[in-house]
Amino acid sequence: MATATLSIDLDAIAANWRALDRASAAGVQTAAVVKADAYGLGAARVARALAQAGARRFFVAVAEEGASLRQSLGPGPQINILGGHMAGDTDMIHDLDLTPMLNSLPQVTRHLEALPGHPFGIQLDTGMNRLGIEPAEWAAIAPLVLAAKPEMLMSHLACADEPDHPMNPHQLANFHAMTDGLGIPRSFAATGGILLGDAYHFDLTRPGIGLYGGQPYQGHAVVRLSLPVIQTREVATGETVGYACGWTATRPSVIATLSAGYADGLLRALSGRATLWDGAVPVPLVGRVSMDLITADVTGLAEVPAHLDILCPHQGVDDLAAIAGTIGYEILTSLGPRYARRYVGGAA
Image (cartoon, rainbow, N blue to C red):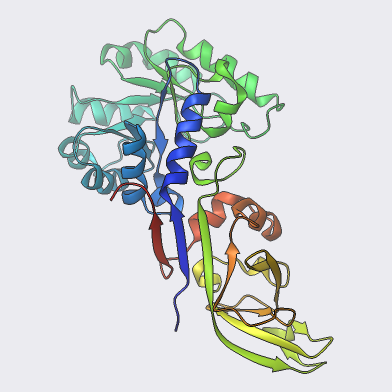
């Protein structure tokens, strides 16, 4: 079966990082979040391109991701583990010079006992109620933690993509209350937080989705997903296409079958709703998205193309997400391993 191609523009990712770096306040370091395999786009290639652009600190979710990233980047860049120091991580953290962001008393205890003197940071819960040490617990353990000299104190905004949400200033006030006067570098803003303004930037910003062409940052488009046409057929008026007779022809039609489906991250919720593109010409997706295949009505095209795009300048990840009732993050991180990934620009 022909292979769909996911083209990833490393120069666009680097340009988005540089723009978000410029948007961060003067004197603020800009990191890069490359967790979940750089949001599905390939952490090894993406991180090298970002390092070439100037990024010197990277954030991943778990130690295993950090280990893989260290192999790609080599010594030098700092790699922070957002999930902290889990049981079984000690050797990786030590041997590969990873910096865990400790988010609970058990993690603090584990790290200080197993790796005394090894760099670490602290993640604080300012109201998101997900990861992080809560205010009362922080007040109790802060003297112990500060004596061990953490490299950074961080927290995470719950509603940064909604600039007027009251949770933003509420969390900001909590972060100040928990960290002011301690003399430790601080980080609070991911992509959305950068756009909220300098008050949220502190000492380090850590853009994620904005690097990859997703909202709330309006940057350069990063991905193009081209799906090969593997068969066409003529369908008479009244004939149906796909599982559950999901689409019925209202005229004599030419239907193209394309190689990709929900096993490749094209969500079933796109069935009968999404658009594909032949250059600048829209082509409707008809019938249900199945595991490996989708179908499109190409009747209006002068000739059947070799492929159609479902992610392109005319339809980005957030456009496709809106059709499916989800978010751009899910579209990106769902892009499947069967796509042939083609990198444009960037570091070798």
